[in-house]
Length: 337
Image 1 (cartoon, rainbow, N blue to C red):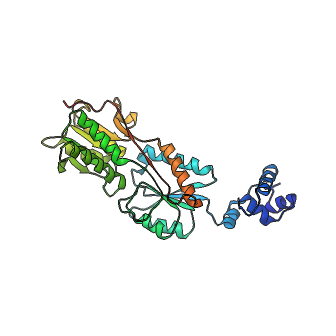
Image 2: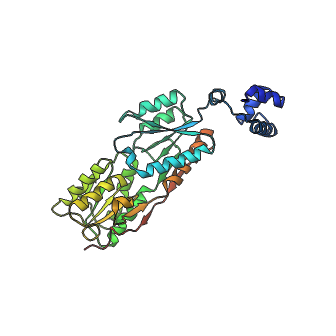
Image 3: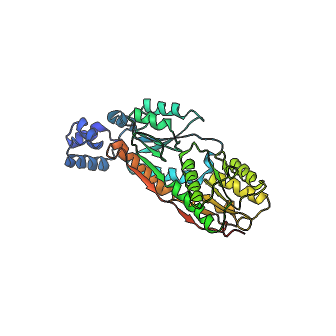
């Protein structure tokens, strides 16, 4: 027999309102009563109706992640790791993660529907832009969120990010230490915050070494394998090709690596290559690509879950974390030949 709220209340000699508020953690019910109610619910096998609980608390018990899926959106293994970490972190507090697919260039409409419909309790803003209207919208609505990446904003907000500028700077300095002077960079669209930050770090390292970057060695491409492939081909077809290349993301990096092989050149002996986040072994075999590495996607996802829970509760409205990357040497870069 299924135990309902009325039966649980009767067994405890308490009102249904008190039992409901105890189960939902309201602090106007004593801790002793809450513990007693939880124990009785466990012993009797009582499970609250999710719909009724949401109506009672006014919470959706879910966090949203709006993602502009395209044909290659699932090609990034790190995204899956981040989602797994978020799911685990939120699950510990009884919240679900809703991944909402948005039409290209129509994300803001999706945000409005989620917020106005009270379909989620908080939002994680992915792939932040240098100037991001989604952040402004959520701030105007005073809606709990954290940004997966920093953005320009006059108001403080919660975020999780990597030190993208430091990572690209370290990669460029490594190539410079090998004697390379004609170094190229392949970037994702520079409207994306991470791409702009990594480009700034790269340029800073070159200028500190007394090198003024050439425009033809700085290529901005689409955030996919085809973009990386075409960008690398353009660099290799120059009258004076670069001796080293930094690719600022692993998706374009896959295409760039393929273009080097198709050109008949060898990585390291003919061209040094560093890819942000590296490449999977099945892509780079028999090489191990030198990479700018960051903490695992799983741990990053768990940290973001912790931050959004703080934002939802109101405890940490503008908490943020900046994580430092490092270089993981492979066999695709080395001294200039």
